[in-house]
Image 1 (cartoon, rainbow, N blue to C red):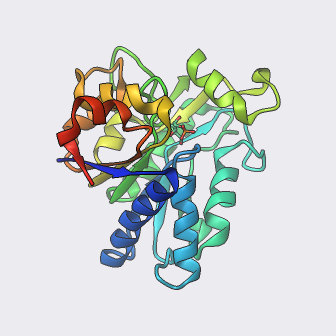
Image 2: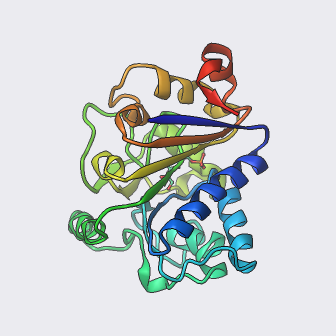
Length: 252
Ligand code: F6R
C-alpha cells in the first residue's frame, strides 16, 4: 500500500510526518522506531519535541534503531549521526538513551560492527515505523545505487553524488567521510510501516522515478513499491513531477 501525502510547505510536511509518529506512539507506546538523519526529518523531530514537551506523547518506552553512521566519526563529532540524533531529538524528549541504537563509527573492525548491528536490529523484534529520507540518487539509508539490494547492515562506499550533497555540512569536501555503515534494504523493507519524507525540488525527479519507474537496485528507493505499507510525506516542491505526471496518486 502506497500513500502519498501532499503538504504545501516543508513545515506542513514536518507536522504531517510528526502526526503519523504521534499516532503510532498512542497506539503502541513501546514502539520500535527506525530513525533517519539528514535535513528531511528535522521538521518532524522538532514537532515531536514540542508534542512531547506538551505532554501529548512520550518516548519513555520507545526503542530506536538508526539507519546509519559515518565510518571514522566519534559520537562527539558534530557531523556524526549520533550527535545529530541527540541534538535534534534525544536530548529534548523523555527517551531513555539506553534504548537508542546507532552503528558505531569508531568500531575498529567495521565489518564486525555490521554483524553486531544486525543483532541489535534483530533483537528489537521488528521495527514498527521506519523513517526514511531519499538521496538525490535514490539511496535509502546509505544504500547507494548498486547491482543488488543488500539485505543486512554493510559498510558502504559513498558515491561522489552523496559526498558532494553531504559536503554542505562540513568545513571542506575533504573532511566528508567516504564510508558509512548502513542498515540494509532488506532490514528497511521488514518494517511494519515506512514513512518516507521528501522535501524540496531537488528530490522531485528521483521521487517520481522511485515511486513510478522500474523497481531496480540502480534506484534503491524503488524497492519501496514492494513494501507492505509506505506513506510518503512530501512538500509541493518535491511532489512537482508527480503532480504533473500522476496527480491522481496524491492524497491531499
Ligand atoms: C540519513 C540517511 C540518508 C538521507 C538522505 C537524504 O540517515 O539515511 O539516506 O535520508 O541522504 O538526506 P537529506 O534529508 O539531507 O536530503
